[in-house]
Image 1 (cartoon, rainbow, N blue to C red):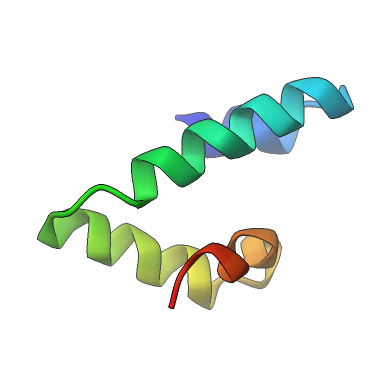
Image 2: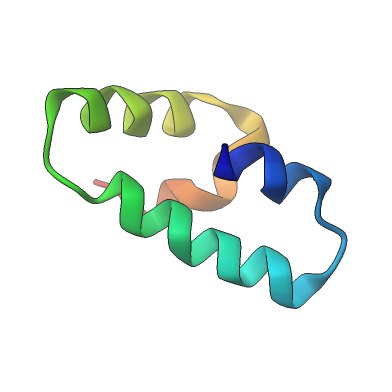
Length: 54
């Protein structure tokens, strides 16, 4: 899963690439994606992504 790769990555450029992949994935329309968006927004560990969603 991309989030696990993001957590393990120490390289800033790699983290940036993974951020873009995660954001693209979470912006897709579907009920499951809305659920994933909710998980990310509710998780303090992934608060960096909260700015990308309403």
